[in-house]
Length: 211
Image (cartoon, one colour):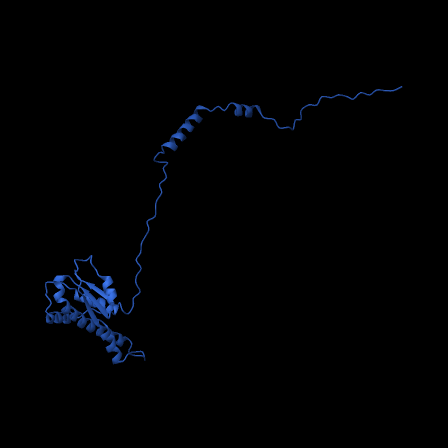
C-alpha cells in the first residue's frame, strides 16, 4: 500500500516591507500642478532676475588706494643754512648782472652745496650767454662761502668729540664745491631742450638750465 503525498501549493502575498510609492507621490511626479500663489511667486522671481529692483541691487564699494609719500631721511647734507642776503646782494652788485633777470642764485647755490657738486654745467639761451661767465664766477664765490658756513657749523657740533677735522681738510672741502663751471654753447629754445647728455659727457655733477 503506497501513499502519494502531494505538496501543498500556497499563494505567496507581496511582502509588506517592500517599498512602494505612495499615491500622493505618484500623482505629484506624474501631474506636477502648481497653485496660483506659486505661479505668481515664480513670475515675480523671474522678473526680479531680469529687472532687479532698487532695494535688491547690491552695491559694491571700491576702496580708494591711498598713496603716501616716503619722507627722505634727514642727512647732514639736507641741513643747509640759508645764504646770507647781505653777501648775496654785495656779490650780485659787484658782478654787474642785470637785475631784470631772475637767475635764482640763492636756490642754485643751495642745491650745489647740498649735492657737493664739484663740476657744474650751465645751459642758457643765446640771449643770456654773454652773462654766463659772470654768473659762473658768482656761483663759485657764493657756493664756497656757503660751504664754509656748513663746515664751521659741523665743526662746532663735533667739537665735543676727539676726532676733529684740521684746517687743511676744511679748506679742501670748501674748494671742492663748485670747483669747475662749464658753459654749454649749444643753442637752447626753452625748457624742452635740456642737454643732459652733453652735461653727462662733460662729467658734470649738476646741470643748471636757464630758459
